[in-house]
Image (cartoon, rainbow, N blue to C red; front, side, top):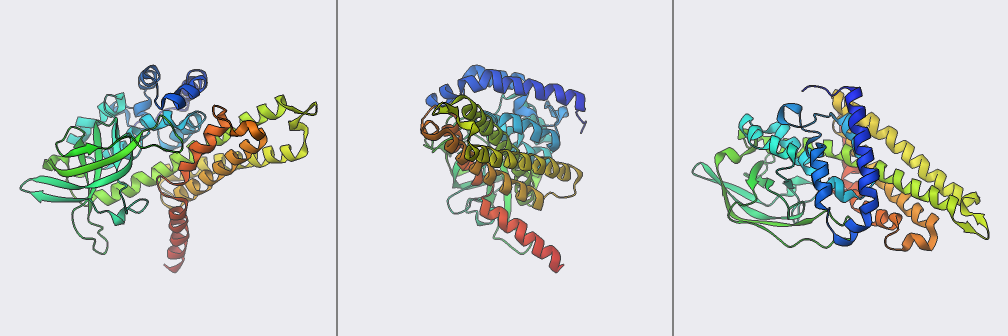
Length: 385
């Protein structure tokens, strides 16, 4: 994979920052009210290469590594999280499954179309009874001649109402020690038997659509099996999720920075008894706690991304970073509402939206509780070895 130079990446990052702050931020209320990303913003994101920034250049992407990905994520986190959600799966958990585990034929068929935004991918892992831990999967795939037939139901699937391609995780065998019996399949959205349910009504993240996906006797050819072998599935899920966790941590830092900036601006412009509230020490204390969280999160994300790229730590650090940063942004968003007082509770004030948006970050791609189990369990197992 060719590396993107620091100079080239600096240009990409400046472009994304300008797009986010100049074009998207002023339209956040419109996105929230209409519960959709406007078509012109979608086109602009595609033209900038945002649907494929983490896909290698040989497949039409920008080819950013994770250390560059997190810098971009911190920029994207500065505005409504629905923007990033639109192309997040193409670059992240779905795209990376193909990059890391797809056959040459699968990569040739899908990656360039994912990178251009012609195809929107959806990562169909979560289902009732199996969320953060894929081992509880109940969706089944059985062989019928050379075909596979898939039955099951997926839940809370991001981009499902818009998706052209579903990356579907299904159980092909009962779990054995060392083999969870899970495979991954590429299922085009128009495959007979695949039904997408109505759009979910969520607490926040308006414009980022999720819904249930039902697979009823969905028949796919042998070529739909990712990597051409069943064993690739679980490894693909775990690897893609670990990478995605670092990305989500970075996104949380970007949103925390926005909440802090909004709070500092409010504290300097709004007065109580003729005095700007930012001059009150208890308000300054809240701003200080927010700033400390942002700085700690940014440093942790950068270090974790570096350790991931070098191969030094692709398991514990991603979970620790996601745990810390998503919990941190929840606290920062809460303080931001407090600094704003009653205004912070009003719709169409940015910190009110942020407060609702960030609550999801502690749930998807592995809950905070799952991250604690991964980190704590990993430390104990390493010591016992």
